[in-house]
Length: 222
Image (cartoon, rainbow, N blue to C red; front, top):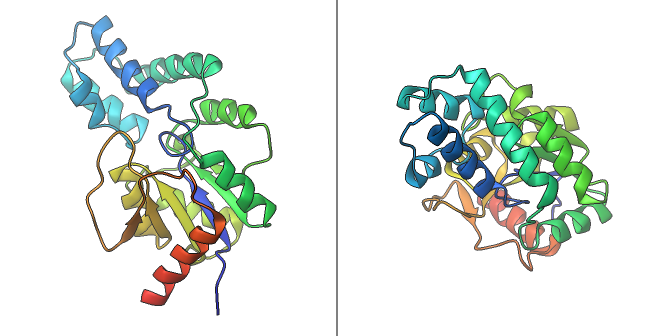
């Protein structure tokens, strides 16, 4: 018997919309304004982390601001960028539309804060998600499993009945640790191979039928 997941959970930055370059630029711009060395390699190490973790790392590197000040500065930078650019990841919106048309529930699970998530949601153009979990709505950010567990709780489904898409190591760690069937779609940083999740090159051409096949293959493996 073929099983269908009860819900599909999506990360935002780097998974459905390629805002990761905005975040990398935001970090480097913030550090440069305060005379602190923080290059692309430093910024890439933060991909998928909670904003407060990134801010603490930048504070340790010498940025003379509070964590809250850095979080607000970076969000402002990315929000302004996203007002004029919405670089959707190939295949992401098409897959979400197909999932929604099939009546499967969805959640956005992002470590971006609510005001940026709302701006991105407003630009999608259709009702894409039943619930949204943001970095400012959880106590423990990715790679902790709390964000995905909270999404499943809000959807009133078992996390084991969910598929989760992620593009970063902290994100896929969070998704896999939660008990969801996790699928990695690496974007700006590589993700090591693991039997805890499946890897895709892209969501381009990735259909609901293929998603269901991946889900059943993972469930049948136990």
